[in-house]
Image (cartoon, rainbow, N blue to C red; front, side):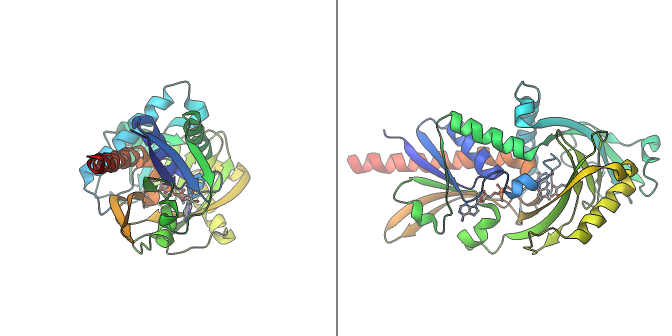
Length: 341
Ligand SMILES: Cc1cc2nc3c(=O)[nH]c(=O)nc-3n(C[C@H](O)[C@H](O)[C@H](O)COP(=O)(O)OP(=O)(O)OC[C@H]3O[C@@H](n4cnc5c(N)ncnc54)[C@H](O)[C@@H]3O)c2cc1C
Ligand SMILES: O=C([O-])CC(=O)C(=O)O
């Protein structure tokens, strides 16, 4: 039987990781990634890349935990291999601190990260404004390195990668059997999905190599995340704001908030400002859809809407998207067999 041709739209974290999963798990297909932007110009490049889950209101907690666990285990294996530095993956320990005791003292992901415990009184002395904290070790991606590594893996296994903007998924019908839509915030226009909205995030990427412990305020607004090449200082969360230009007042506010938690950051050098639009939705859209037009059918698998947590769940959602692609291929093969009989 001829190989089924799969087009993946989008070359951010979700498109590339989904394309890698499909190409490495389904032998009877060829994979092509088509995207208008590539690293270093995607939202995924702006992210801090920390594996700390955000809660999706529209997904049952046990499923979110499973998506996180699959992603953590996958990246932990890379971290423990000689690929770690090429892939830009490292382990990082640190603190999530709270001004008041949170409702969830033990979050659902506490037994997936490593060594989760409450902070001691001694540790909390560093943060006089905060009353409670969680200490743990998790993984961090250097996002541009990880995206390049995924792209290299894809090209290495014979997949194709093209730069092109898609206005309508039907453009792909004549050449591809199944389309996988990983266009992130682009799905608002491409699919007319009004459930997806941007949450603007501005961060600073700074040089401060002496900072090697992460600090995250539990309010989710202020964070200091040391990575392989720089430290990410955050942030902002501005719902429905599409502005990709850096705002100098936000930069000063972020810097001041981070210095209040880690005063040594006053000496940080080489400060770069980055802005990204989190593709936010009540739940990730991880679903099969058969588009029908003029009697023709186009099987589509959607995988978009990861909001603030794409890095934390990407491998899990890639696996589920690949399973749905497998179902589409089985249905196509079944119908072509029927047509021959
Ligand atoms: C400031 C900030 C910090 C973050 N920190 C973290 C973190 O620490 N941990 C975490 O888990 N998550 C974090 N995130 C969230 C994470 O970045 C996102 O969830 C993730 O990057 C989404 O990936 P994506 O591939 O869906 O989107 P994108 O990276 O936006 O990729 C979408 C792709 O689709 C392409 N595309 C769109 N429309 C079309 C079209 N019509 N035709 C062709 N191509 C198209 C785009 O060019 C792009 O290549 C952060 C986000 C921000 C903004
Ligand atoms: O909240 C965090 O710790 C980082 C993040 O995911 C974001 O800014 O979206």
